[in-house]
View (cartoon, one colour):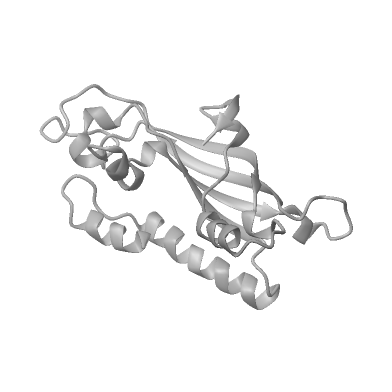
Amino acid sequence: FIGTLEVFDGYSEKWGASWSDLVANSTGIGLYAFQSYCWDEQRILPKYSFYSSDYAPYRPDALGANFTEQLIKDYNGQTQWLSFNLKSFLKNTNVPVWLNLAVGYSGNGMVSGRKEAEPSVYPGPYFERYRQYFLSLDLDLTRIKTNSKCLKSVFQVLKFIKVPFPALELSRGTVKAHVLYF
């Protein structure tokens, strides 16, 4: 799905294609195949979280004019996660089977496809771009025992959404604690 967006970005004057994004998208497919082959289970889940960033109003055409568009377009509000199921790696422990440890990656200050936006494309204020790394807990909802078929279906649909939890952020050489991070 995201690979399709990368192709569209490649034809966009505002963004352009990114080899690193294409590699990351392909790695997701490889992660699934590797786990299926080696462990016969998915111990590491790619997950997504989003909050509405402060940057979208500066470039609604590129970052989204409404919440639904921002979910896809505004990378400033997106965090990509790898959620590790603790029980799968620590078999002989009392760790709950549904508890995960998540590592996240995001960026901030991105209002154009280039580090220095051309004034003809974006004449607004300059925002410093920086990377963010996160450490947080997560839940694998599909590992919660329930007899409800409806609830199992809901958990299956939501399994790629990172559950909000407290998080530590490392960015610009400092560590910051978030009471709740999306």
